[in-house]
Length: 522
Image 1 (cartoon, rainbow, N blue to C red):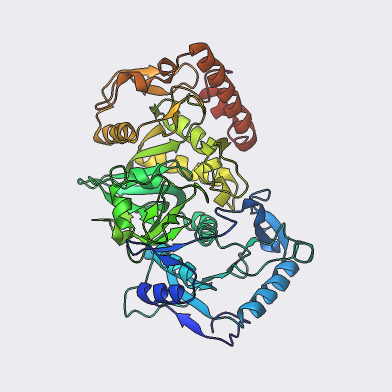
Image 2: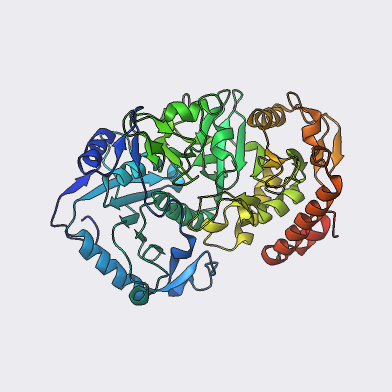
């Protein structure tokens, strides 16, 4: 059975190859082929996630478990079932594309998933992002279903939602229902939320992070929200990629949830990000990237549609990637923050207690286009556990798991500012990528372990005074500002924002605010 209650009258295309899906998409006029062979599609008005339109079905067994609020808005179960019935009736007259895959490289913690798509290009996206069963191996019975009907518009008054778009997760029905938006990233992130619910119950710490492995087998993790550099910094030619976005940390080590990468393409260049550049070829999917209609050459500098341009491709497109998706217990963890205020040091070392504080804080800045309705300027944002939009459970659950893993495995933790230096937004400039790469490489190699450290006077971080390959003046942010009084004012305002945020999300750990929170304001 395709899905309970779904009886298609048209054709159902199950588990097509990438070439077949590309053919179907082109035949239906859904997308065009770029000069490199990638399938280029537009998502229309919605070029990013729609957080206002995300709901969790309010089911009796979940009432005291889910972190209800703006991230997990409750939807009445009766309303969900009525909307589901209407969507299934709608899909019953259309050709459908089905992919059966799974999440979780560790067989002990995997989830088999069926994705049902109205459009062929979104089914290709699903195929390339999820993990794929070995050729010739029958797919096991799926444990969770995603139904994506982008051309079906909800009626807010009738359906109890906020707009024509909806992303609804029913844990009881093991179903994610998505409609009214063509943005394929909603499929990926809905499933990430499901894994964030399931994994803690299995003793696995779910993480919004990239992971890679060095020649000696050491694992590094890169936490951060969209646009902070997870995919870019983890795609390092000197190390092997485990995954670029979603992982679990079990008693055996780190494992990738996914089978592909979802990279931002804005201002992509072969010099800056060669591994990502070379992965955009036949089988890859481009979202909202401007493509010249004559030459079919993508223009990654064109942000007329959105800055949230994306490429989705299977992980084996990255040379020497670890396709099995496993790594050992990490030795270095990096918190990546795009600091729009320009006051955080480019790299700083955190104690374990400070790491838990900053994990719960999750400071970064939203970048334009990653969510519907954002303007052109970055906005400062605190995102609990660097994954606030994808957490079905209260942040303390994940913070306690994180603290436990740090205690057991004694990993080093670093905070990296991939945002602005020399001034706030409008005056400062983005930290040069080669310098950020040099700092991350030095931390992993142990080159920062013996250099003199300076305590940041506002936040209390340990900041290295020197780093191979990085000019000294970039390491201490106050010295990079032409107006140090302005720096002090902006830094103090950010410290106050940290304290106010932690009073909300960290009330279970008030001692951290007074012992390892910002020095200013204690």
